Length: 134
Length: 102
Image 1: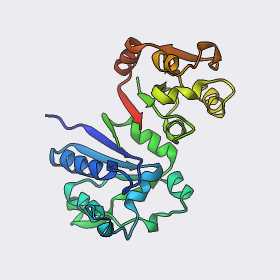
Image 2 (image 1 turned 90 degrees about the horizontal axis):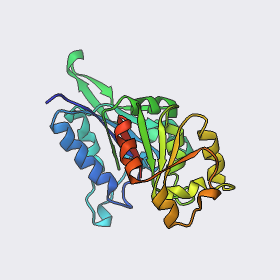
Image 3 (image 1 turned 90 degrees about the vertical axis):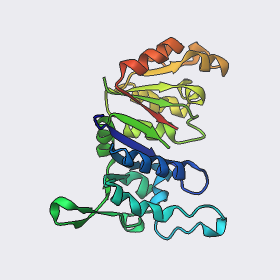
Image 4 (image 1 turned 135 degrees about the horizontal axis):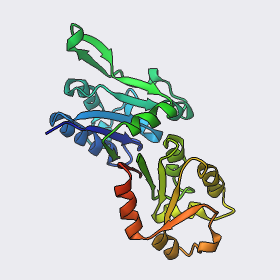
């Protein structure tokens, strides 16, 4: 099966609904099937990547650390919309550091998160084969 | 053709339409369904924004959803194309992919 370009568009905050956790699980499944996976974080979706989340006191699954596993699944194209960050008073430094190791570059550790403008993200959306929304 | 953007939320409850318009490239289409159709009512703040968007995008609205909500065809801003369910299906085949702004 030829691989397809999948874009997961995440627009919901992480703990008020099940969308973020469901998205993360589907992303990991999609990556296991060796599809070309890209993630976009827009609107309240940017809160999913905020550092220092700990939902253990809520009695729900503390899934924030799982984002760090994405790099091991070759999910290293993670785009965060700059306008959404700025509107919420956030910058890239407020997000958890997500990295991957580039085997073609002597396993150098590289950033997975790319902050992009609306215009750039609009182009990324157009380049995909399949769009999945959470 | 490119992307069919589908918006099903009221512009006064969610930012789905606003985000859609920010991230839709010129030439892509916008289809309003369910509570998304409230945006097409002339004189509303959302319709002013849509009026602008019409310069770059064809904008469609689902007739059954307008009818259900009492949004009369004569109260729509100019330039909106009404579609029935068959038209909805045709749009999803005409465009390469659909983006649903939940």
